[in-house]
Amino acid sequence: MTAMHAVDVHSPRDAELVGWLPTATEDEVAAALATARSAAATWAAVSAADRGAAVRAGAEALRARASDLATVVETETGRPFASAREAVLAGAATLARYAELGPVHRGRPPLGTDFTVPCPRGVVVALTPWNDPVAVACRLLGAALVTGNVVVHKPSERCPHTGLLLATVLAPCFPAGVLQTLVGDGDVGGALVRADVDVVAHVGSTATGRAIARVSSAKLLLENGGNDPLLVDDDVDPSWAASQAALGAFTNAGQLCTSVERIYLHKSIAAPFLEALCQRAREWNTDPQPLVDVRHRSFVHAQVADAAAAGAHALTGGEIPSGRGAYYPATVLANCMPAMRIMCEQTLGPVAPVQLMSSFDEGLAEACSGERGPAATVLTSSMQHAQQAWRALPVSTVKINAVFGGAGGSDLLDEMTTTKVVHLGLPNGS
Ligand code: NAD
Image (cartoon, helix red, strand yellow):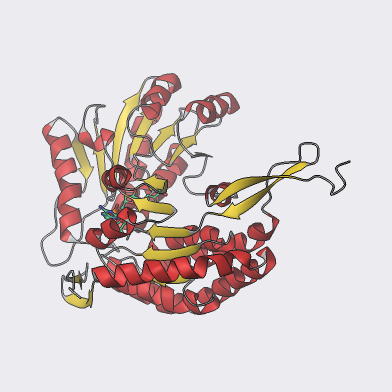
């Protein structure tokens, strides 16, 4: 039995080693998959109501341990305790929602005497990222488990202790083998996705999603990185709009999948908006949150430096601070242009790059271009512009006049199940 290797976790605050864990061996990966396969039929046969009750128990257990989880999230990823706790509670709320939705999840309406029933797909491999580790895991795990699938979860190697604590809290709510967690990096993830499993659910970077698609023959659920735009129309209060932009760009140091990544600002309100945004950024910098590690900080700063070299102007921030830890200041970049990497690619850092637009239509066209994000936000007083935007933007969630919000519903339950048609005849042939 050969150990693949160990994952070390360093504090984002001071780079000290805060823990390490051995990664799962090839034998452990194989054993977990065999256990999952043998538990699948029994769990699938449990009534939907009882599966919902187990997921609800998981939600309650998570709520009870929210502070413990938040402490570990803070240690491993640098997210401040209060914000990390809120995110854990959001994960518990997601589990509670799936506990309700699962038992009422139905097939399509009947056609004559035929009807459809949703059936679990079987073994689900869930691969989750570091940037919102508990809430994202709860979404995949809740939807998979409540619909009767068994799960092998591999949390990010940047927060393996978070993943293991989540397993300690949730797994006892289910029969043995229904929810298992393995520690490891992309090698362990690679071994899982190449195996004979039914679903691979990956939330993470676009590059990893593409790599998985090349090697896995399972049904793929890929929720990957994006480049979420924010459009600021000319008819909104610039100071309020700047607060929204700051919240979207700087919360969790810009490391949320729905963080504001690029801003299209109507030029008629540029001066007061930028002034207010810089003020917010400076306030943010009085209580700085580190990025997840210095490797990621280098990635963020490279995009800022590229933009500056191409003519962008850092109104505030934009420099790596001296001292230990992976800190990076909330940064406002003016004079951004479409070809800059900062506008075309995901940054996942506390940077608000601003490009001016002469008209709403021009900004909307820019926002619709480039890498698709999971979400987009529009700040406008015009219902016509709001409607135009939610029709055109090629994203899963469009948020009007609020940078955060929008909960996924039963779509993931559909994805985690197959639909079986039952043709129901009478035994006498009539
Ligand atoms: P990542 O893709 O590097 O890692 C995610 C998971 O995949 C980890 O568990 C990792 O070990 C595993 N993995 C890595 N390489 C693999 C491989 N070759 N085969 C199988 N598994 C592999 O992503 P990350 O850096 O941890 O997360 C940040 C990214 O996640 C950002 O791009 C962010 O936007 C995205 N994200 C998206 C959403 C969404 O809902 N769309 C939500 C949260 C995060």
